[in-house]
Image (cartoon, rainbow, N blue to C red; front, side, top):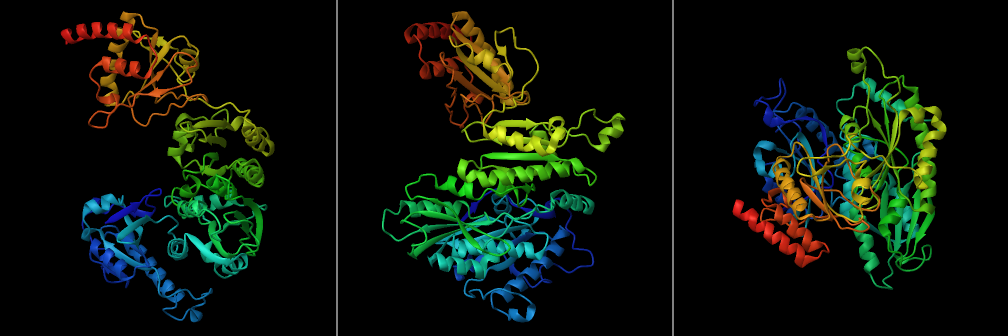
Length: 620
């Protein structure tokens, strides 16, 4: 049985979709099935066979297509990786090849193999979310199950792939919690194996970047003040002197953070004199330059927030965003606050360069202080080429093409823009913007001031909202906006409110809108104190610290009981298809649900509903 562990996505090199091409062999090149010397897998069952024979090993599989010309060069790259690993794991003499580092255990070497996508059932490819070739996946055996793990890391050079293999190999073959007898043994392990156990993640170049753009990114992100963030190791005393729940939690933490390369977790099982009591966790920093180990913080065994402690210890200072290697580090579920600087990708843009330097200093200062204030923040630089992100966050850009077409340049600068997103409160996604006009006035002070004001809770969040005034349609439905939400819903404390969230392009929404209008007419007929409202969620958002309104699907209906209006009750009754309001056919179904979750003069209202429902049924 194959179980996929989908941590973020399948990360790819510059690639193509093989099924879109005609069946062509690579021009003037050999068939990739026999030219690189890699282990060729015949089918999916072959994966399981290999892992059953080598139960403690790990298998990296390249899924390729002969219809994709990039497969040829990529498999040659993997051939070099395979040969290097054979040297490093003692299968050949590495001393003759300029490789450094201690000998590695030869009984558990990682294997590299390839499989032609045509030899695999298409449903298997779809299950693993492989849509581009060539693609990399890790496989390992756990009991009787074959576990599939996404390859997360750079793939540009053989060394990038080797670094990623070692990260996975150490975490999943020897870890995820490494065992040592004492702190001194941990220091010895780090001194000996540090470069293989702990790594910094470098951005994976977007394959569409030109050489000039790559040079520009390097220039933007380089500073005389640059210092690499220290690695973090967490040590837990495990002397079996108390309940072992904290040991289990520590192991769970190691599994959850296993893809994080700048952190490693150790259990100390013999001499805890340098740590404290059984179950205590101590954080140490490790210098990337000297591998010196320094103690920085302690968490008592009774402390409940082990995850939060780890997050606080490992906040990166600043990273250049890419979808391949940085995204999974920057956006795991346990990181809730992000400071994102959107910049131009222009070698002559000194303003963006200064803004990045200012953000770097502010984030490094915050990183030092975060241990005391217990507030994690990830700092990112996002280039204007990431148009999906800019569009999602409503960040406007002005390209040379815009200038050429309109024959003018914008009066005010549009980039750089600093955005802070806060998801610490469940169901809330709050945004704060520092626009270019205010940012560039004094770059050295505007950015650190903005971050400090966010930490002090004095910033006002940005609300996405249509500028249209509130209006009421012929059926009595009030059409509200993000900005008018508080005055139309929250402020009317004496009335109940039913709010319908929709998208103009949603098919179910168009049908449900008819039902919603009928519902409004019914409520008006019986003169209930219930406001019927609707909001276009594509143009508006609800950002109120007191309530959480964040629908996963549309259409969506929320009920706000009269009173404080701080409770938003979602319509969550599902039909046999798993839908909520999307397939409702009768407006009385909504009223019945509202009566079941609200507080009303039930007998009177039920009588009125039954009377109206009888008329409704006879007409229908």
